[in-house]
Image (cartoon, rainbow, N blue to C red; front, side, top):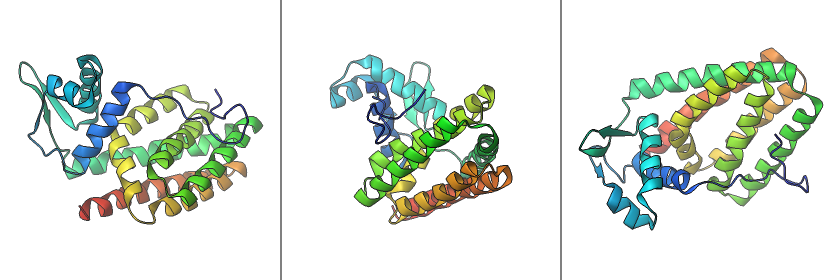
Length: 226
């Protein structure tokens, strides 16, 4: 399914649900240390804070639990946790390999229409770099990567990659707050796009693997500034 707008000028931004908005907000506070490990997340309190019912709060907490940022304990509610550094490293390592495989397959399997769509998305990201908008860049960046997963034409691989990416999403979004990271990310994307457009599987794999490695480094540097 195309993520381009009807005008074809830029990617259409999918509308997020309330639970997704809550998940992103709470994940950001956890990653930045605003909500420290051990903090209890009360459904009623969160619902009142954000002006929503308990249903989207409960779903957001469930998603955060799947990401490893929250532990849901029977009869005790949700507690903020923290992923051990070695676990986080392993997740980024797996993410790099999964995305690299997707990029390599996409270089060979993407249709002309899919390659054109990827180029449009890359162009839209350039506008967001110029605007210095990390929030919108993160949203468009997710669409960019999803297009590559779909372009692999391997549904099972795409599902595994999306699942892993979802667990790492809060950490990947945080890196865009680091000064200069948007422009650096765009330059890394440029190498990925060129490799895919050229049908160069080996170069696409290398470019994507290097990109995800840099994402991990950028996240580490961002956390050190907090």
